[in-house]
Length: 494
Image 1: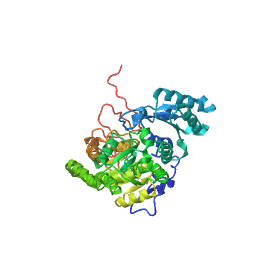
Image 2: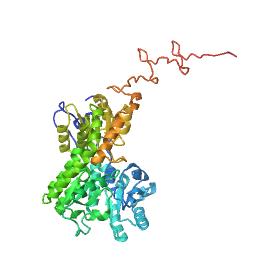
Image 3: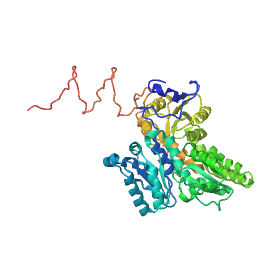
Image 4: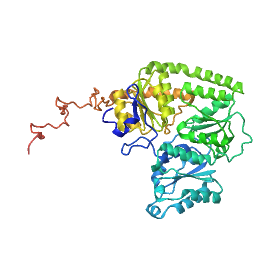
């Protein structure tokens, strides 16, 4: 694998048909590896942030509060309290003497001003280190303010992003079960792990409503505390992002007896299967199956001509995929194959052993499979595999552009809907414009060793046989003598 892969990380890199054994995963990031994986606090914010009628208070230094609306694509059909990120802004004095009183005052003032339906208080690294008891503060605030004030134990240092998911699901579980479910239909579902990026939850809800299925709540895209409180009344949980909300699905299965299924809304095949699976669950209502088939036929008739165009242009291109959850990678591989593209690198931040086994089964021989990768590894394999496109999140964008290849944002920062049938066309359009952009003719593409290749443009620097720069003939070049000293030309002497 070469020196680019650290010794202690080699069991987290697997090449199909070349590597024996199983890939190692679900472990803390290697210290010093500059992992692409986010912290515990980030994981909790990913899940809880889209709850639009709740206050979100970050108990810690102001820097953590930067993770707010401007880098997220979650939309709301009503209140937008989630777009405001509040912080206790702990200073040196607070860290020495404790920040609990400051947090109490902040909760009281904000609840009085904004009248939220719930409050989420996020612990950060600093508050974990100094030992602030945010659970006790939140318990007292709940009694005083009259709304649920929920502690989210998301100290960034105590684990991985998946631990942040668990902390968020624990907070949500204290809301689920508190609402009145008397009016909930027996043919009803919750959608878990859908965050309404660019309005995708609305598209998916519409599919189910056309089928005749009631959506009790979406956790947590366009979320409302009232709807979440009634989630235990649904007959089925449909889990879209298995990494983030699977813990809540397990909790609801154990406590309320609600079964769950795993689905994906990305890609034609997976989106259709998501509708069929729900219809199959409610087998006692045969009209659901008929309706689901009708929806699929109607939607496919709209988009297939465009897909044929993209397949003709993009067939044979290669892609690198590195995303948060492995389930998303499955859908991306299927979608890219639909237009004739192959995936030469597939990785995730939070995949488990079952996820990686499925990736192995799906991928072609020679595909590199990565768990919790870092920029050095990603760059190495992108160059070796000759990828034409990198699909990832905001942290992978600079890697792609520095290597001179196209990039597609498939994370929470994006503003374009990529789920559902309409989203599939949006995705192929973005892939096409990224891969086929004429700008890459002028990009400093590199070879497998990371060295810049000549691009044939007038901006390239020419070098002699020894690798020294040759004169380009421009008036800005400095001429040197045999000893390497600058020769200075004088147009006239005084």
